Image 1 (cartoon, helix red, strand yellow):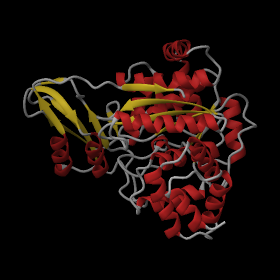
Image 2 (cartoon, rainbow, N blue to C red):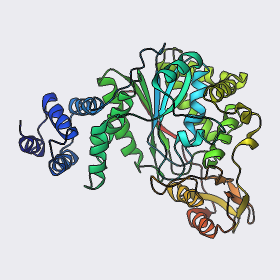
Image 3 (cartoon, one colour):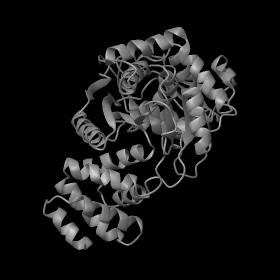
Image 4 (cartoon, helix red, strand yellow):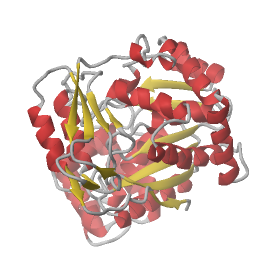
Length: 433
């Protein structure tokens, strides 16, 4: 087999066989196929697309290019959740204990964040003592005993995807549905889950800016998952404004505690229930999505979800008393209010720019080597559609320095007030096939 022939084949719109796709991924992983040829193939895929079978084959080839995680020793159906990103996305902190409270094993691998705030592991590490660097055997034991564990990503998972992603980033081929879908799904499959629930974001703060693009990506990923033997469903959710009110690591842990008590922001609760009911249904713990949602609501009402969060924190070495006393979490020195300059209704909040404002405070990483300040961040006191009076606080800045003029300027430049506006629809659709 020659790589140049395969590039030509895809350039002309023909399907690559399973053997040809395996040849490409194996050769590229072993550095036997050069970047310039894989760049040419990526561009051919960008323009000519891939069939559902090709997408599934590419996903599995990348999933098996390195380590795969064997979770067979964990009893029950392991359901994983993946979000395509966003600002203030606290869902995992709520969903993991909420679903685990219904006796469903949640074996979650999470990475560190690069951008607006830390990733799930960074957020959890704002809890004193909690650690996510645990071995495979310990990980399995914790899930079997407590139904929940979160571990940092380690090992050599999907090296082909890492190489291909870096290449796409510098060859203008990032925004390709088959390449995005296979990239995401290869990591989920390598991580060992039996079923997968996807939160596909759309809007200004998301990678997919329109609902149509998000729906196309969701269908692509659900199709791949189902084609390779993983039951997969997706929710298309809005990211035209940040989710919930908190943007920042310890601040998001506080918000997760509030939500597990039943007192969290309504949009965060709604999305967690939409994702959670799919997880419960796929795990076989409910006969319908409606029954699944009622079980989740009851877990919040009864306090079981909050108790499971405490149990999880303690099992991974953390101080579980922060659930009853969140002031034990890292706290910023200064709280600075950003008042509205006029009366009206909040018409837009540019999610990614507000996320950047939080990063300027130190809540996120500008580079992989940046240090995160776990205490700092933003609390949105108003969301789109809310009335506001001049002088009323739009945002509370939690900072460890007095001079935050650049952050205030960024906030004013990206929260618009007009005469009227309606809150955006949060759930744009459900994809099951």
